[in-house]
Image 1 (cartoon, helix red, strand yellow):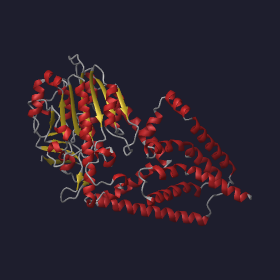
Image 2 (tube, rainbow, N blue to C red):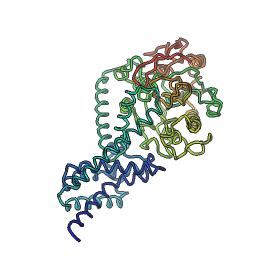
Image 3 (tube, rainbow, N blue to C red):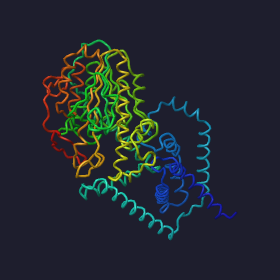
Image 4 (spheres, rainbow, N blue to C red):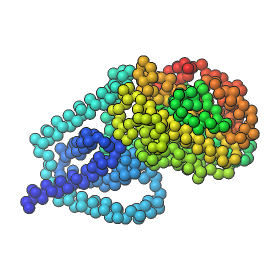
Length: 557
């Protein structure tokens, strides 16, 4: 065997090893399933990006650098793909970083055969990297072709993203669409190993820095709440819903039976006119959990939050989330007495909200407790939000879904899947209520969705959410309150006022004051903004923080 042939074999093996996460992603990633075109396009993009440094580096340096910054960490991406069917995310990497050393040792000891395989591959890689000829891997002619391929990939990818952007958001200004396409291109790197690993790591570092900054900024802040005089076990829960619109619950008049369990639940109030202050989760959740408003959103980072207000009243606080927390939520979670964040990614099979109720069983104690439960609700992709027995409304796209199918022509299938997700939300909430009722104590659950969803409902042809042109379907949201018999015995007048205010128009800023009022915490009460109060002031205009970052005054519908 000639030295040239031997070198070619070494280089080939090294490239195959570097592409292991890519091959595994092509076989398992949810974004690539059922589409060989996507798989081939993904492979081409990865190969082009992988070869790009080889245009400037000689073989030994190239492979050693790729080995250190790429191949050493490939088990992380493969583990994420195996568990979540998605490349490494911020949540997955964060869980690895925060894993206890003892737990990590136990896990690795139980996987010792795989550890041996990984270590063997590392040894093989670096031995071969040391044996390759130290010349440029790509000659000038191939280099020119590679530049052409890179240009074609960029042009084709940009055109595809532009077509999708104008199809889904046809009402947006051209300048905004160009910015969105640029952002979409950058987002693609979150799905390509090893770029995703370093981008997510940078995001984690930035997030921790932000949390520390905010924590220092408000460390001395106090609401001035005195410890509550109540000394008995109570459970108050705020459920943050996701992408649920008011008019798709049959309890609110929808013509499909999407919420039969809630409709038959005693002591449940569904509010007619509740409105979110934002049509994006990242903007909406801070406006629910703090005294901030759409007109004064900065207050969310200058004051503490609802769980922290409960802590001042000597409640134990907890947070259970199915979602990757937004930065503000991450800061709040750090302050809670108990918390749990599910490691599974959003689009993984079997990742359902009912898990939250099971975890709540472990956290419930015979004390005064307040919980925030952040559900997946009706988060897109809708088919991933519910098990097959809830696939009542048909047809849907099932497992073959692609973002390119988000068109008005496919509205019926999208709505069917969405309504199935609403049906599962009905089941999740009813199971939560059933558990709370079994505690035989004063208990209240408040559920409010962060925002709604558009389905080409009017002449503006808006879809999804986060629209720059705001739609009532994105800010008119469900608001439910359930209370136990024991709670009604303890606070009969508050319950009477809850029923009285059932049709009073309110925005999501009532959640902060209402939850405290529900718990009998009155030191920072605002009777004009609590649904438990006879002095609740009805809203005549709702201020909504839109996807463009502007704040619009919207009428009550």
